[in-house]
Length: 412
Image (cartoon, rainbow, N blue to C red; front, side, top):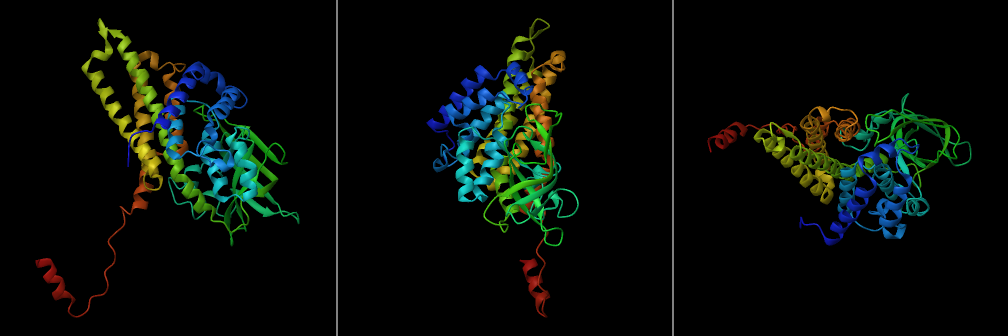
């Protein structure tokens, strides 16, 4: 493994950082989140058309750039640095890979080029607050209990009356960018409780009847959440038939999602640390910069080590998401939480002012852990998958000569 970034990856980082430095300052972020969409639509179109950001990891045959997960991780780190409000995570990280994995040729051809061009935004809607479980980050998604298990609750699906379509009924309470997404991928149960199975459906909220969307007040305004109600809503099955392993596809998609979220969290943590360092170098107390005090230096050094370790974990996860995604996300979210909390404290009374930019990063840390964590559950599930808590394998019943053989082995 070559840990160095390629020239192309460095160019992606440089170009995106320069553009966001010009158009995504803290005041720009506050203005963007208060729009109806929750992001700057003009900036999003520029990122899509000039840089190909939403199609960075999509195949070229579907209008994408054809890069890999590492290139998208580089882009996510830069968007995290600026706290860019955008549909990037919902569209390019959550929805597009599922369409590519489960969709029919016709569905992929119709949807992915529009996503790559920035013409179509999409998101994944799962019932309740179970996004982390549905993606296999904090629990096993295969039993479908996170989606209601076919009982009351969740989102239920039934075949339409003779038209080959489906009808959905239910609610998803915390959908990332759900108020503005032009396409919803809805996880729903079909078959009732005895033959319950989880399927994914395409819902176009602007044209489908029975869709009620409401933007919710969220702790982190840069990650807007919405409540979506489906009332006998017409939907299209994602895929050719209802036999696809949807929960397995969600779990597989969860690994790269974790790696990309980790990269974004590392970007936010790194930016918060840089801003804090600049502040303590300029703020004076007792006739000298507070950054010159040894206690402050030690605290900042600890934060630097934490952020760099999380960054290494995030990029290793981008290289090997199946084995490292969950743990990298846990380490990155923990680094972001600790760094932003220290940033508020080291800014002193100014940092405790709600309007200060330090709180933008602090709220991102708290909200991300609520939405994709918490950290201890991410680590616990990763440990369960690795078999760290598995007991010793049961031994076979011993024959007449077993005690003597066992004694010999112990003596040796």
